[in-house]
Image (cartoon, rainbow, N blue to C red; front, top):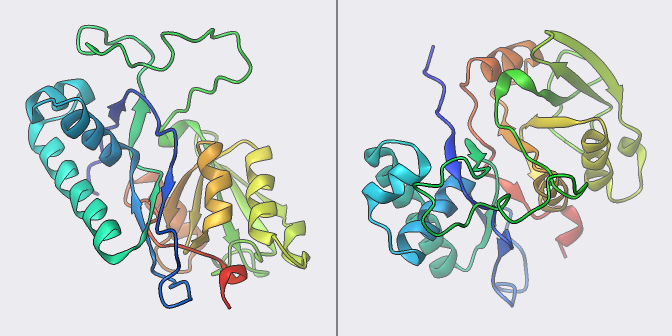
Length: 252
């Protein structure tokens, strides 16, 4: 069993999480035209390139080893370069992180923690948690209710798994028969059901945007077995989803 990844402390979420070229390349949109950068990768760019921190200072801020910061930073620079050089969209979402709530002030020299200047009684404040064992997850499944559905929005059912209680229930997906916008409607359905993580083979950008705004993390499934993917999630073996596609409605 692989070791679970340690959450990286992040002071703020990006104000804008999608960037891209103004004009389409060759008049079309490629399925692999999106580069996905995780929240912690974005944070290393912010701290090192913008705040001018050293990698050691960044590691203290994020509460991880310097070598870990170095690895995350290199990946972030590679993804940013690929977006600029190849004209790909850059989507910032997902990862293994926890938001700072003002309890690390000695390291937070810039006082950038988002909750320091907010009223916790405000209903607009949502403090996300990235703990596998304290959240409900969802997986799209086929009619046999044991196989992962390759289409998120058109899945007939969603398996809702309460990892802490070790229970699974099936949720009908009314968006499956929708003439349009199935992904967005399905995503909102799961958000309304308090899902915190979604396991999918692939996901469209509009549905992904709904999840991002609700601070729901997307993970990429391994194989077609529902039970095996649930076990892999519990063991921390699933990677965050990186192949966000533009959606069929974008195609000419």
